[in-house]
Length: 88
Image 1 (cartoon, rainbow, N blue to C red):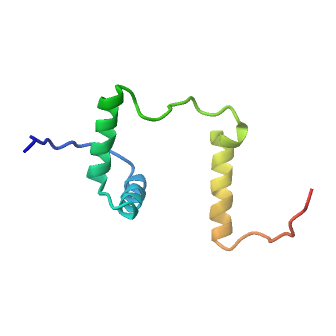
Image 2 (image 1 turned 90 degrees about the horizontal axis):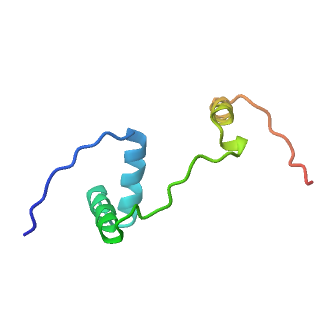
Image 3 (image 1 turned 135 degrees about the horizontal axis):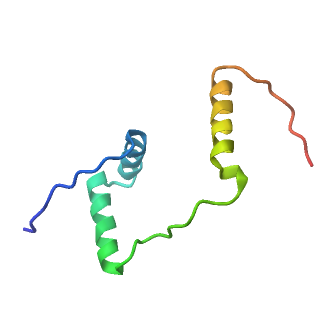
């Protein structure tokens, strides 16, 4: 049997919960998914996905994202107006 070690890390609890749910949908545990990631790193000798700089698109900027999140909270609280869609 292979020797194992415990890995401890800090991660956002919402992110962890969502990842656990998605892994469960795929029949995996989060531990198995971490192991698969580590195996892929060792096998490819790289991070197995692209890591890019943040987008320069203003839509994804911090200011706009904060505005969108505030708008979503306002709508979820029952404040807001429904408008007809405009076909351009």
